Length: 143
Image (cartoon, rainbow, N blue to C red; front, side, top):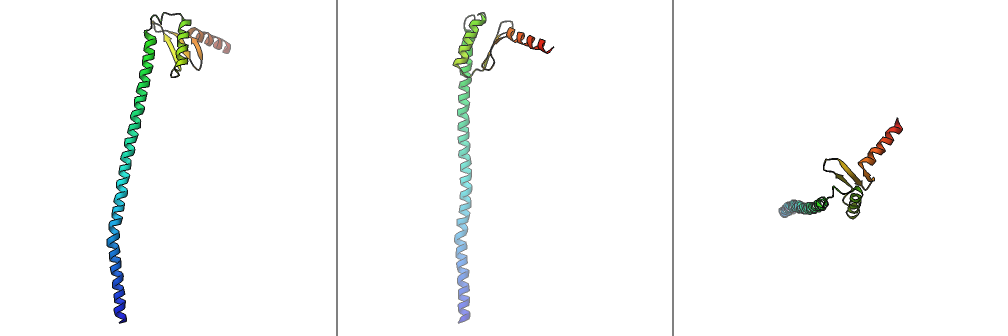
């Protein structure tokens, strides 16, 4: 009788282990597959979001560049801008720098290709002659 009980208990344990394996293996397999599928779908969604953000930034940059081109085109096409006196050009370009923070430096070049005026937020208003005079003074002090 004792031997029969021992074999019976041993058989019961074997059946229990077999049932656990049969029921847990598919659960573990499904869990692994689910984790993999979630990772791939999250990667795809993150990529879509990043592409959307990049496209919006590209549109913003494109509109910004178009705005800059339009502003400069209006100034360039104004009547006799290059032929104006330097003081009037300074006034117009100072207004441009004060109104639009996107411009850090504006240079006016005449029809011969020489620089007439250079206005910068950092250095202030200078003309080519002012720069050359400053350079000459600096160079003479060094000698």
